[in-house]
Image 1 (cartoon, chains in turn green, orange):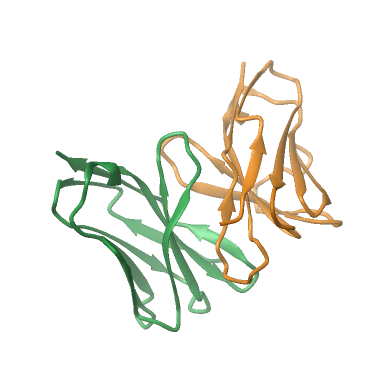
Image 2 (cartoon, rainbow over the protein chains, first blue to last red; image 1 turned 180 degrees about the vertical axis):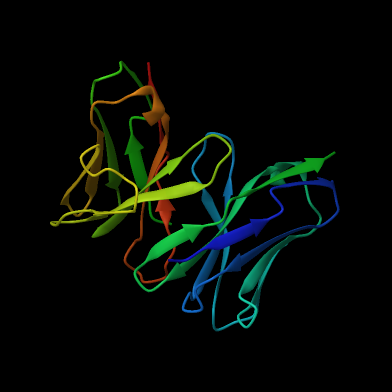
Length: 111
Length: 116
């Protein structure tokens, strides 16, 4: 089955700096790659997603890049703010609508 | 976006009892719902895929007799943890897609189960 690896597991960034989280996937058939933000005790919330027909997508301070050849995709958060502190999960989706999640990254923004 | 509601948000039960968790799609019909389990500081692990009108598909290592899933209507799926034990204590989250074909998953609020 699909395997998604995510790095780093924890990340501390000074407020205003950028944060980058990387994921790799194993199934070349995967075609949808969402990123979720989860605050403590809350449900995961979709923050951005990308499909295999594009290499980059941006939404204000958040961007995602996809390298299909290397089978990896990354989340970029610029001008980080304290409210960006949360756990972030990448995921990969293939054919039968089953999402496989990465192991998560705990992002801490230092004021 | 689509709304998925999950109930109860918290439940505490005694060992040996059964607990039912409900997952509802409020403004769309969901032929497929997914049940995840999340341990503290860990990722979401897919337990099973719930299919309306048919048997659920369980992931490897998940006991189907332990975690009973019923998807009797297009807006409701239930997860029953039978004969619960302390090791079943966890955060259970359901999710569904809204049928637009985007692939986006909408999550319920989650249910924190504590088995004493």
